[in-house]
Image: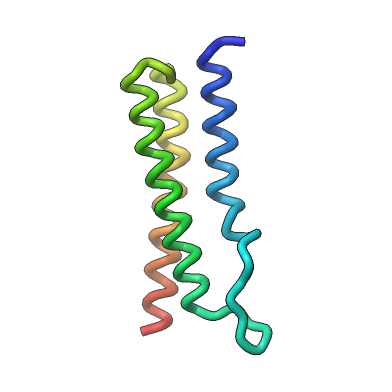
Length: 97
């Protein structure tokens, strides 16, 4: 198996984990409903994980561990995820204000 395939599989797992992790974190509850601070905190954690994944991807690309095509595809996926998280974070903070 080539290094590019292994790196792509690992990056795909990281992306799936970043997307799915907030759904499996314990919710901060009050009266059975998730508290707005818990949602915002979870979104901030997800944002940090996605940004960290982008930095790791850029480092791997600069070291030659990831091909240009894999880098561009993965960067696009992660960038969209960061944008989605930022949009939702902005919406939650506006609702809370």
